[in-house]
Length: 430
Image (cartoon, rainbow, N blue to C red):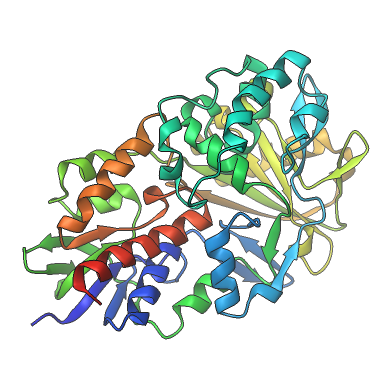
């Protein structure tokens, strides 16, 4: 007899949602987490007078699954709209150009693009906007657009600056590395208000985890599908279960599940980006503008970086009780992985002060953060491989969750956990 109905490996958002859904269906569930905290990349560090976020910072009205969970746990009234929304300063030709990434007319109004550039963006976006995907948390909804890269059909400027800004800032990759399915889903999801959970991005996932049997500091070495169930090897112990959900990064899943079917193994080769950034705490709150309009983000894309290190700034003043806070990312060409923390912080601070002289003498503290792996990179063809992998999962006793199984944002992680739980309950008749 199995020790438990389902073992979930990983207590990030995907794993927690899967476990919560399975538990609600009457199944016994154990969650094994290698780290000492719940939430995975969605982690909030609370320090005296401020908080620092690791990931999953914001959401939009397009995050439908997340909105439902916020309502279920009573946190829907504790989200706040970011006043600057998707208004962004895009660096081109040594000048900051205002762009509103949250509105359809945004490309038409920005001075960063020529008429020819704008026409290419509209030609790419038009067919996407008139088609509505079934699931805004799942790239497979747009698998038909997976044969092309985001930049196909765009002018070099539109692809190297306009579409590249959110891709490089949020996912750490250039637009030519991404499937057009990413742009398609992004255009539907990133619109309307930009919102944060008051008090920290981790509040949703930690609330969802309440009541679950989550065992931290328990790395899993191997998962075996025995045909009539699974055996999970963790820290020298074995746990038997009827099913398992591996809610881990793709490379971890591939390592611990050597029996993965060929379509799944092919999907698990998906690459991940990395992100390196520094938090700069300032004596006074700093504001950002572009062409006289307030913005919440600045982005310097790869063609514009030159010898600089900075790739962008996210204005995080509301996370500090006093003064201000800037989240400053390193650009990809800067190869931040080759710099130690002090040199990286020095270079990023120098760049911020170059672009914003008012910051000179304002910085009181610096905290460097690095994440590798960060998010899965869905290049052309990867969404179709994902669909093929998901098609074979119901045949076995091991299922998968995580943003690599749906889409690389919080709603994707949530949907992946829900989908894995649905496949398992359908199989078990729960």
